[in-house]
Amino acid sequence: METKLLTTSEKDINTAGGIIADGGLVAFPTETVYGLGASAFDIGAAKKIYAAKGRPSDNPLIVHIADKLQLSDIAAEIPNEAKIVIDKFMPGPITVILKKKPSVPDTVTAGLQTVAIRFPSNETAQRLIKAAGVPIAAPSANLSGKPSPTTAAHVIADMTGRIDAIIDGGACDVGVESTIVDFTGDKPEILRPGGVTYDDLKAVGLDIIINKNILKSIGANEVPKSPGMKYKHYAPNAEVTVVEGEKDAVQKKIKELLKGVDGKTAGVLAMYGAEYDDAVILTAGESNREYAKNLFSALREFDNLGVEIVFAEFCEKDGYGLAVKNRLYKAAAQRVIHV
Ligand code: TXA
Ligand code: MG
Image (cartoon, rainbow, N blue to C red; front, top):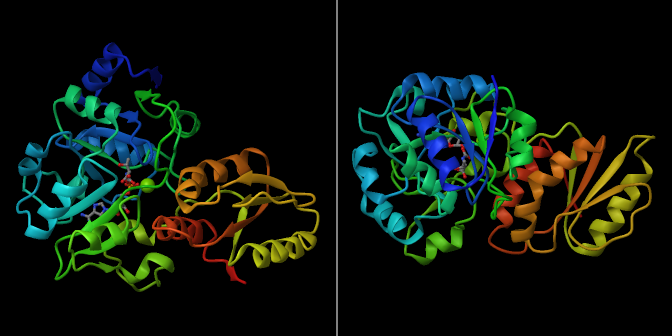
C-alpha cells in the first residue's frame, strides 16, 4: 500500500477526513503522541488498526472526539465525577473510561462494556475529527511494543506501507500518552499516568486512587484493569537500566556501570549536563515535564545509533514524574537501581 504524506493544510486535512470516512487509516498528531486513526463506528476499519500495528485484539482503542456533544453517541452514562473531569480537563491530555453505548463496536472496545474517550487539544487532531464527521478510534501510531511516536518521522519509520496516510504536524508537546481515568468502578482510578497529573485531579475535589500496577509488571495470573498494562511496552532494542536518585549519586553510579559494559555500545539518557566517557549521551532534560517530551524520541534515537545498553538518569521532581517513571520502568523491564 502506498502511504501518502500529508500536511496540515485545509486541502490535506479534508483528504485525510475523506480517507477515514471511507474506512481507511490515517496517522495524525495529538498533544500527547501520534495516533493511528479509523472511524470509530466502522468495524472493518477498526480491524485494520490492529493489523497495521500488530496489536493483540484484546487491547481496546481510545475513541477521539472534537466536540463534547459527541459524548452522548458513545457513553451510556456519565457519572458526576467524570462530568467534573470532562468539564475541567477536556480538551486535553486525559482519557475517561465510561460505560459504552451498544452502538460502539466490540472491535473498538475489545469486547469490553466500557469505552475509553478522549478529546485532544491539538488543533490538527480536532480538525481531522471534524473533517471525518465521525469520532476517531485511535491507539498510538507505533508498531506494537515500540515506543509511541512523537514526530511524523517516527510514524513514517513504523507505518510506511501499512496505512493510507500520515499527517505531519510536527513534534508532540506532552510526549507521553494521556492520563487514563476509569469512572466505572467504586472510586475514580488512574490506570495510566500522563499530562493531567494526580495533583491536578485531586485539586478539583476528586477522591481518586492510583492503580497499583502502574510501577510494576503484571503477574502471569493477574487480570489488569486496563488490558494494555500487561503488554511489553515502550521497549527499544537496547537494554535499559534506570538509575534513580539525587544527581551526584546517580552520576557516580552510572560512571561505575559504564566501566562494566564489556565492549558494548553504551548510552546515557541524561537529566543534567554530564561528562561520561565512551557513551552516547542524549538529553532528557532536568524537569520531568521535559523528560516526558524527550523520552520516546531518545529511546528511538539510541536504537538508530546502534546503542546496545542505556543507563537512564532519573529523579522524581514534579507532577510529570509518575508518568515518566511508568514508561521508563517499562522500557527498562523494571531494571531499576535506587542510589
Ligand atoms: O494519548 C493517548 O492516549 C494516545 C493518543 C493517540 O490519543 N493514545 C494511546 O492509545 O495511547 P493506546 O491504544 O496506545 O493506549 C490506550 C490504552 C491501552 O492501554 C488500553 O488497554 C487502554 O487504553 N484502554 C482502552 N480502552 C479501555 C477500556 N475500556 N478499559 C480500560 N482500558 C482501556
Ligand atoms: Mg500505545
